[in-house]
Image (tube, rainbow, N blue to C red; front, side, top):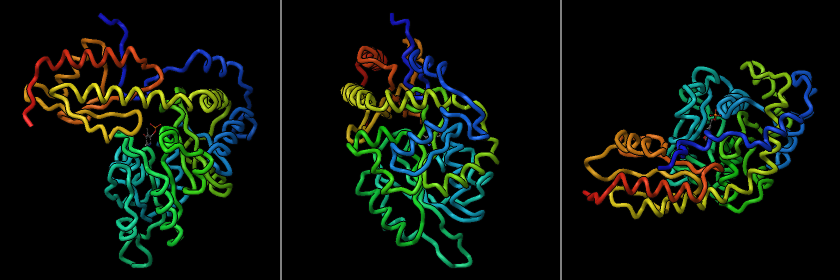
Length: 351
Ligand SMILES: *Cc1c(COP(=O)(O)O)cnc(C)c1O
């Protein structure tokens, strides 16, 4: 009986490593509202340099980063183009309506591919009855239940389209490092394809909180005011920035291990009769298998797995999500596959 709980609900459930906590204890601090926290400045500079941008801005969450970006790039009543399954469209409590006051124009994104033709058809300029398009929002990795990678070529073609219409491109890169590793792309090259972006310190990088918004100097200066308006001004915020610095130095390169483990988990699941998973769809650390037997739904499976010390996230009546992170070991993957096989003993498939 495995006593340890294996938590695959998200890569946000991780606890900071002891080394990360030590880093916090040793951080030099100051009043960040006065621009005097050296650790915050270091993280903001480091993040901007890393991603080929001019400046960075520490914010409290990915949602705050996204909303600050919308408030900064767009005027009230303008429209933004974004993916139908994006976090911005689905999971921010309608903040774009309630806070940033912009209108979404969602488009279908296939396996992380943003079709430029489809996007171009949705760009509005000048018609008085239509909301003017002011921003293109990409997400990479795309779809937090799938973790699909947006290719370099695709980012390039979207950037070209945006330039044609003088639109900025914003990247919600909550898990951008997972994408960059799969793309084998230098992070610093990202600045060529997007005008601004954000990444989460809490997704896979093991930090307790925080996101960093990056972009050019003018954008970050305006964003700083918008962050303040949302109550995001902070004082000795080096306690948040220090784990971020540790994460950029120590937690990025190892993400490929999570991807390998996710792929191994997916392969094992593909062999279980009663579960369906498309291996082509497993790009990074996220997998979403579908239950394909009549006698078990997600609620039932979650209860069975919980008894065996495994937590996964329900995303549909017969669909659940698992995200691999740094606290999941090879042995954990073996155990999860063993537990899943026990939940589907000799089950039949009805498809
Ligand atoms: C998690 C996530 C966010 C929001 O981050 P929070 O820190 O939870 O607010 C935004 N975009 C994407 C793609 C995410 O996965």
